[in-house]
Image (cartoon, rainbow, N blue to C red):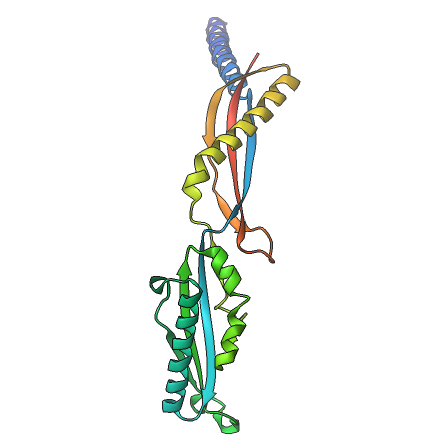
Amino acid sequence: MKTFKIEALILAVALIIAGVFIGNGLKKIGTDDRIVQVRGLAEREVAADHVIWPVVYKTTGNNLAAIYEDVNRANKGIATFLMKKGIKASEISAPTLQIVDKHAERYASNFEGDRYMVTSITTVATNQVELVLQLLTQVSELLKEGIAISAGDYGTSVQFEFTSLNDIKPAMIEEATRNAREAAEKFAADSESKLGKIQTANQGVFSITDRDMYTPHIKNVRVVTSVVYYLEE
């Protein structure tokens, strides 16, 4: 009987100690759970400030020497046209050539037509975006010189870029964070709480996309910040 009383006493003390620890733990959990996680969005529409324009000329033939003369003439005409319109020589890269020998292809036994197909690409890289937009509608002038420019080929489309993200980053982060705080304050008011300090914050990743498929020179810049606030009674 004496042993049973001692064991019962030990068990009671253990339960009391466990109750204290559990109570403190629940209190801490309750405090940590009083948080609100919100997101803030900031978006801006900007104009592209850099453009890469591959000017493509294609020709075919059976005599490589004659093809070379034709391509050389076309490339000189393209460069002259670009510089006459305002593109700087430093913004024009030397042409690159791609030559396809159709006789060397796998199924050449059924080959008909010219043996060689040559593609010459003169690349313009410039910040004169508006000028390039104008020239895209004026390249038909080269037809007068017998130079037909290919357009819309896969891998040689015009690329418009926005390179000044660092200039608008601080203001956009500030706007997104402000929007996140407004959402948190609204939540706190609705839950009859007070908004406390920030527990954690994530700036988020900036994305730059075309506004639409028809105006790739206009970009949409977007960032979403994620902020966790403490809630106070």
